Image (cartoon, rainbow, N blue to C red; front, side, top):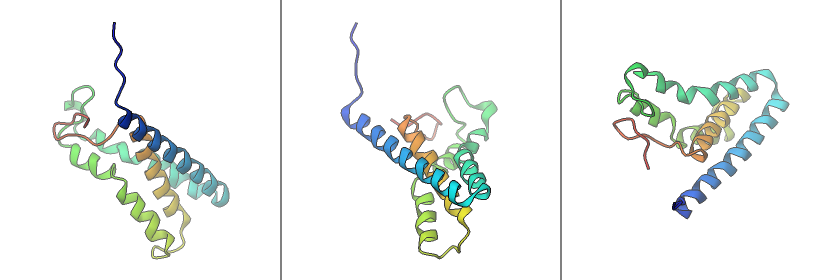
Length: 131
């Protein structure tokens, strides 16, 4: 019996995403400790919200696949550039001084990093995972 191992590049990417997720999660905890319940609620909410598009057409989706109707929304909220832009714009002061907005961006980016670390990336048009 032969055992095949994944390509080194794929493993390195997943380890990098895991390191980023660990850093972001520590940053979320720091912000929650410093700013309290509103920051906690925003972070937890945005750790969960990016997977809500999976519910679109869930009854018609095959096991392990998204409904093709859900794919554009799922892929949109699983791009790291959107929460990263929220964090950068907040950091330069253009979005005011409401900390839960910052922790929401951190939570969202943490969600994306965790998904990528566990091998869940963007989806193909038919709802299957991209390789």
